[in-house]
Length: 120
Image 1 (cartoon, one colour):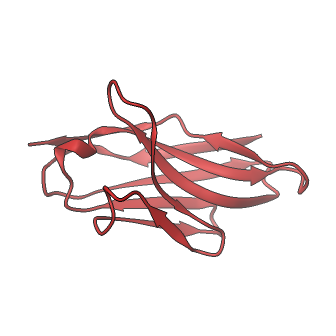
Image 2 (cartoon, helix red, strand yellow):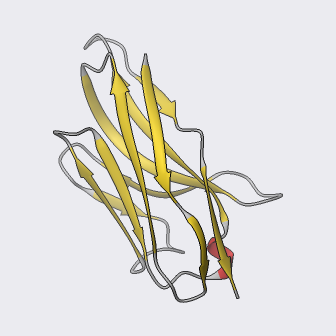
């Protein structure tokens, strides 16, 4: 199994910055994509950003130019630097990792979520 532990998040005023991090541990053979998703109250979970094992990143249009995703393959960590935060960024942010424990089968694992609140 693979465990994901998230850290960071919190409360910030609009225009401020926050950083959330996620560390993967367990019986990891290989990690492929890593990413962040978010879910605001009353809304569906949505993709924020993903990053491939080679470092290629994709972002939701709503965060492009404000958020930066990065990863450390040696440490099995993924980070999301969030700048110029807006009240509409308020949500629970979830880390997601596609990993294999065997080198054969792949699964997507989810973190427990961390709250990000942006006040106006």
